[in-house]
Amino acid sequence: MFTLPPLIAKLNNLYLEFIGPIIILGTLGVLLAVIIHYLLIGPHGKELSKLEPEIIRLNFLERLTHFVRMVSTVILAVTGISFALFRPGSLGFDYPVIYNTHLIFAILFTVSSLISIVIWLKDNFFTKYYWQWLKVLGGYLTRKEIHPPAGKFNAGQKIFYWLSSILSIIIIISGVMLAYYDKFILGSLIWAAVLHGICAILLTATIIGHAYLGSVANPGTLGSIFHGKVAREWAKKHHPQWYEKLMQKDKQKNEKKLRLITEN
Ligand code: HEM
Image (cartoon, rainbow, N blue to C red; front, side, top):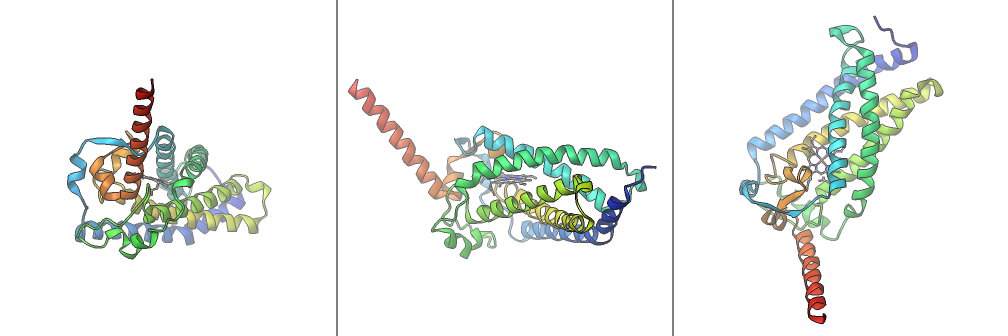
């Protein structure tokens, strides 16, 4: 049977005894909250999913990095949770296979997260209508449809962007320390292991909420991460300020074209 190096065995015990139970409670808590929200409040704007997606929402690079980040996060969560919940050798737990899978997807997660963070930075500064959205919590706690002002991303999405960026960076730095464990003293490694575990739980929990809001809770949204487009009505309702800006840009482009044609 595969035996762990003593230092890694100590850290593995830390996960088994301390971080594992928090993972289960945290993940179940968010899953429960999502189910309760669905039953009590449910999706807003079901008709929006039936409309033709015609407005470009996310470009190719945004979609590619999001896709790699999404897939790598899911695989990292599954392999990471296996470290935290099962002893090597128990339940046929194959440590080297799981460890190597975790490392390969960690590289993909690092590259895609860093690119995502950079390309979405300009869209995630807080704007003047931030408070208006927050005051009604985006209308998510009422059955009545409310559409507070929002730019390309609403205030809730901006908070998620910053939270997921900070957590991703801590996970990446602490992960590198754990991968190169022989270069660090035990005290630093214990900090790295605790931070890695806690931030991974928080990221998993926020992503369950994010995936719910980006799919079931807001029909017509999910397609944007695959084909990049959304319906005109979806944009008007969910991101009115972004839609207005797009229309102004289109109008200016058309006026310029018309001027060029009439001048020639
Ligand atoms: C697990 C399944 C996931 C689903 C179903 C999902 C869905 C979506 C959707 C539909 C959007 C576009 C929203 C819009 O156009 O308004 C989006 C954007 C975004 N996603 Fe995901 N996503 C997932 C995983 C992730 C993960 C793992 C991360 C980060 C580690 C992430 C980070 C983001 C960020 C930062 C944005 C832009 C801001 C925002 O919409 O909140 N997503 N996602």
